[in-house]
Image (tube, rainbow, N blue to C red; front, top):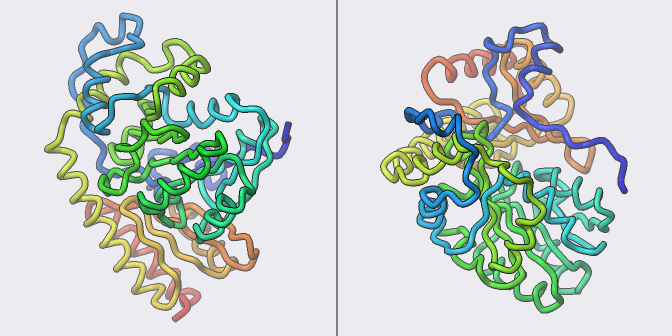
Length: 351
């Protein structure tokens, strides 16, 4: 078992509040990729608070099948539950995982005694080579990747699935950030052998707090995976809210438009202050690659003013990726602009 420190995550406003002495309700959290305009919670019938949750709620199942366009799926308390369970289903093997990405994948495969083979989160060719040269038995692809925005095509994913499945291996595709690009999702092909697609309602729907995720795979694999999940892990309240959100196609279309518009505003704004730096765009966040010292200065300056952004040290050690979550509305945008102008005036951002 690997005893390295567990991964850290964005969104920890309580820790930031203690560190900087700013009350939690005064923070603007840009450290996650969660939609700032979350799905509006409907009135919830009292019975969902009183009754034990159903393990097979048909309203939720039908809504999820329609949204993901699949027949086979499994629900859990967020895709995190599947990330933790999947490594327990195999004997120790070699698994390819991006060096930069959601680190819970790497952590749990290591904790279960598997040999993790890192590939570049900026270059999927390195993964392709590992699979074709039989260097790994399984592979995790975060598609699109957080925070590098690197993305594989459906055709690439199918090639990797086929190659791995021929050796009884798995391709695990984490699609937490795919909902604005449904034509790029592998969900339609998730019933094929050797693939597990993970979906979450935390990012696109902005409902990270209800802890709702889905695994899409063939029936046999889902049955085995189900045996590793806790009974009643998803509350009735969460199931009710999730079903309403999955069925609300009008809100979904509007949300996609708003996310794209908010992302475009953030990119255009950051290009003003970082005209020659590498800017990586996603519909849920925007990343900027900077010299480590400057990135530390900017992150600290923002935090001292109650705005939390995410830092990702890069393998070279000299540069850091700053990830900015999206801003919605005039007040948050003006607050961010003011901070960028202030730090530019104080130390001069590179041009």
